[in-house]
Image 1 (tube, rainbow, N blue to C red):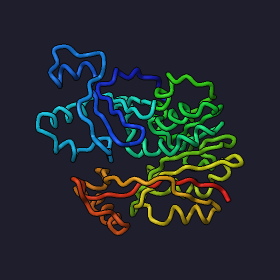
Image 2: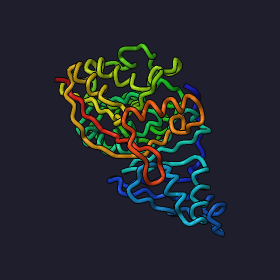
Image 3: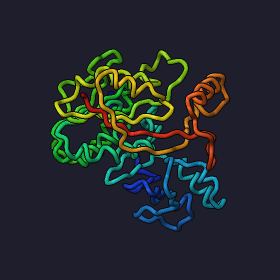
Image 4: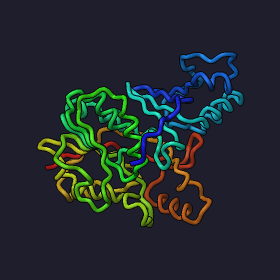
Length: 317
């Protein structure tokens, strides 16, 4: 893993309510002056725009419908880095310049966190597969005061660096490990068993997989269906977030491998993945046509396609 890089102070804060009923964009001191025109910036962040019932962290359609001056100011704020995402007492700062190829915490991150909270509170050991920014591991430790052991894994070293920095200031007595597994490792880099394993995996299928990413499409879900039971303690649970576009395969794989599955929550959101929806390249057009056949919801409210996020509780039978 690369050496620690000091991430600058945040310029944009995205604050999401714990019940997902609202999202507020706030500007820090420097942006209060340079973007909003204040004579002197305040030490306290300024709320600039509130989006009710958010379905995206960056809702370009709703932003585009604002009054022109406010629209342009919000767009300008979103172009600044680093940004901080806050949700239910947890915050993580992120910049693509510091953590390339790492996703900023998104709407499915906080959707997952809401479902994770009671499981983390009751657990003594947790593990995250594909930790990305580290937000969910930090959230589990923040709300899981009885946790004594936590492991976060990712095949991307930049993601592990982001997770390490996110966890650096957390006051918790748990033993926390960050691991980078090999793609063919049946344990996914874990040693021992866990009360709760959680994973927000790639969930958009595609007609062909790329050789440089073994966890693209639905492959990681299939791997967890086959191997996840061996990583759980007695009475343990696997938490997954999948998409309605995933089709019937994930639940079929889970059933075939002895899992009882219960849907915990559902959220309808736009499909906003440029590599899928741009339609500019032959690959994008092929992928989009493939997903149309798998049940993309017709567009509304500024987005061409929508899908359902589904939080699943998976328990060995």
